[in-house]
Image (cartoon, rainbow, N blue to C red; front, side, top):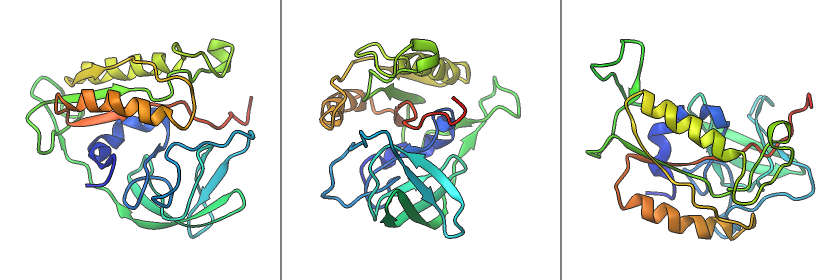
Length: 213
């Protein structure tokens, strides 16, 4: 099983935080295995990912490489074929299917993701970049150890709980915000994995500024 593929069953839940980027073939968004994990652009620019028709799939400040893969919020699975300048060209591989169930205490229109291969209805949530913040509400793009992204995590966790899902929400900070942050957060992910959750979600702030701001 490729790294982070365990979270695929819950991708429908992460539309609120935009595209979830995974690494390596069959993960989600871009790279050769030798490339640095979690590498981000620091020059204020970003990559635009387009499909075979030139339609924009996503934009990301994370460095993009051929071979990386991504799954969009509508469950379309793409692989990056080439990168030219700030544009990455993606090939559609297909669509990922989600399995849903409706608990008895919820209405017919309220779906909760089924636990696949696990006995626990448990989702683990954490933040690799615990400093990520929002200018409109936090006044700064970064607040080490207390980023506005925690507020997103809290709302997300409460929404899951309201749907009958148990949530293990971990607020361990992983500063500084550098390429090693993923190595530090891996320890947190390992601890969370000991409880055998059905999925683990690492919530981030979008790295692209709102063009209207």
